[in-house]
Image 1 (cartoon, rainbow, N blue to C red):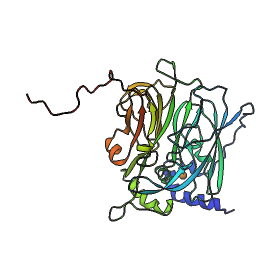
Image 2: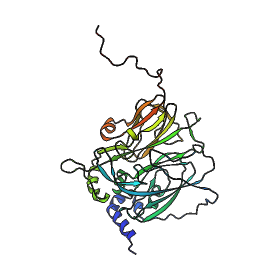
Image 3: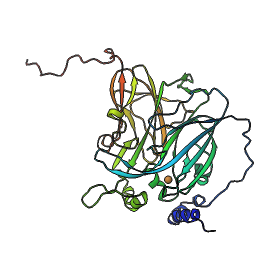
Image 4: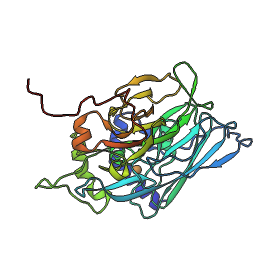
Length: 376
Ligand SMILES: [Cu+2]
């Protein structure tokens, strides 16, 4: 039967099938219902978690207080126009739960992540979700492709601890287009007994923040002004052209230039230990905290590996999420940047931490203020 579903999905895949076949991942375009023995989860308890907007992270225990559980999440896909810089440039964004990046999900190793993904009728595109943390079926992408007006529930076991990206991956050029239109986020899977330092000793954070870095490719008109579109589909071919040049017009934290600076700055205080989870679903980046360090850094984000220590800058590979832990030692405003400084200053990849507390003159002191050179 020819339904609206097959019509929409058919349209999406007609454009993308040659690319998929060419790369040998044709399975992506076939509807697939895996057959296996039903998993017996009857002894597990369930817990519902309300997701929150980044840079904030939902409440969670660092050390699991129980055995593995089924953790239930719901995300609604929102296609929405967003302003992405101070000049009012817009994008017809595609988002998980209305934010770029989507919310950070936190579970423990061996928990079951059970996500209900909703694609409201008001949207225009099919979407899905590929969890880098999950095993099989394109990270869940093959099982979650939904049209506007549909929803689906996916469950996977969080077998590997670490920070991992999730993103939309509907096939062919739709994949990078949806990702650079905002459809990405991260999940943090904590070891059941919490994080550990390089000696295997337990360490804790007082606060966790989630910074999602986003490259945008906004088309310009003949006069060089950024173009606006009425829907994501309207801008598709123009944006594909800019994307294929591989030079982003914007490189931002949490969806827009200034989303984490000034009044939107993240906050901390001297003596507080902050875990910064940083994802980039598409492109390499190199976070740096100006005037601070990474006390412990899991560059690749995978907690079974000992953290690096005392980093000045760390590398987040495109398509991954890393985690850095730092205890602030001095008050002030710290810029947290992508240390490609052109991207930080000219393209937008800058955030601020406002840190309260007392200055430590032993760590740094202005011995004499700037002034004229004394005449000899
Ligand atoms: Cu999508």
